[in-house]
Image 1 (spheres, one colour):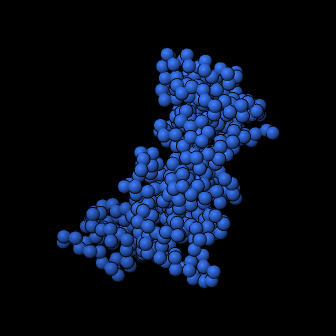
Image 2 (cartoon, rainbow, N blue to C red; image 1 turned 90 degrees about the vertical axis):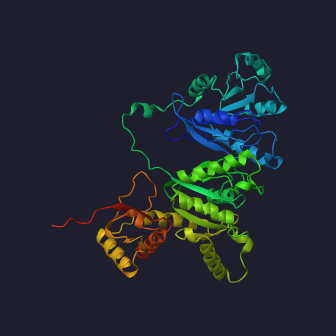
Image 3 (cartoon, helix red, strand yellow; image 1 turned 120 degrees about the horizontal axis):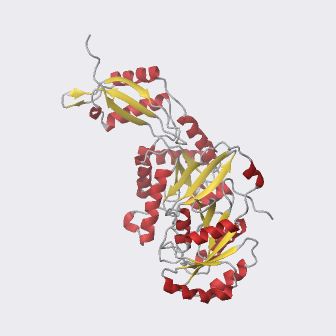
Length: 466
C-alpha cells in the first residue's frame, strides 16, 4: 500500500527504540529545536511527537515515539507500543535507535526482528558514540543484520550529517511533475493553533481523542501522562488546525520531579504560541485554585480562550439537566470572573456529548475578531461613558479623552484580539478599574466572545489655541 505523501515534505521519518536510548535527543537534533523533553529518567516520551526537519537536502517530517519495552510506567507499555506501531505504519523511513554504551539488549533484538518485516527502509542508528574510542562498540550490534547503520552522538552532533544524507537518499524520490513545473503554489493558510491546557487528569488528551475519533494521544488515569506539548494536525470542514496537547499544570509546590517543572514551563510557552487556548476543567472537582492560576496565565498572555467543563457524563442529573448546566456555567463565571469573556462549554470527552460545539464556538471567536467599531461610534460611546461615570481624579488631574480609534488587525495572527487606542492627556491617569469599566461599555456594543479587549493610551496635547 502506497503511503500518503505529506505536502511540501519529502516524507515521514519515525524514530523508534527502547526507553532512554536517546530518541528525544535525536528528534530535537533533527528538528533543530528543543521540542521533546530530554531526561535520563526512562519513559519520559509517551505520546507521539512530530516536527518538520529542514536540516537535510530536502525537508521531511520526523516522528518521536514513546520507548518500547516495558521500562518505566508499566501501565503505559501497551499504549506506547500502539503509538510506535502507528508511527511505523505511516512512515516512509524508520530510524531504529540503540544505545552503544548500554550494549545490545533482548528488547533491541525483538524490535529489530519486528522491523525487518516493515515495508519502509530501516536505518540502525547507534547512538551515544560520544568519543572516537566508543566506535568499537558498534560491533555488538552486527547481529541485528541491518545493511544500513550509522554511528552518532545525538547529544554532541557527531554523525548527524551522514545520517541526514542517508535519510535523503532513502526517502521517496520527488515526483516528476513537481520537478518540471515552474509554477509556485500560493502559500496555504496557516493552521489555527489550539492549546488544550488544564490541570493533570482533567481530560485534555481524551478531549483531543474525541475530536479526532482516534487514539492518537495516550489516555491514562495516571495524572501527568502528557509531558511534552504534542502538536497534532487536524482538518475540519476545510479549515486546518494544530491541536496542542500540553502537560497537566500542577501547582509549583506539588512538582515531584524536574521533568514536571520542565513540562509546566513548556505548557506556559505553549500558551504564548497558541492562537486560542482551550482551558479544560474537571467538572467532578469544580473550579480549583490551580484552574484559576492557569486561567490567569491565559489572561496575562492576552489570548483568546474557551473554557470546557469536562466529564459531564459523571455529574449529569437524570432530570433537570438544562437547569443544572445553567447553574454550573454561572458558578464557573463567578469563579473565573477575570476571564469572563471566554465562552463556557459543558461536555463529555468520554461520550462525545457537546464536543463538536467547540468548533462552533471557535468559528464565533474568529468571526468576532473581524468586527470593527467605527471611529464615530466608538468616540460617541466613550464620551457617553465618561459623562455618565467620570474618570477618577488622580492627584489634581483627571483623564481627558481627545479621541479613540480601533487599531488595524495584525494579519500575521490567526485570531487577533480587538485593540483600541485612546489619545488622552496623560496615559497614567487610566487606572485598571476605569479601564475595566470602559471595556464593559465596549462589550455592551460588541460582545467580542472569547477575545480579550486591549486598551492602549497614548499622550496627545490638547488642540493649540488659534
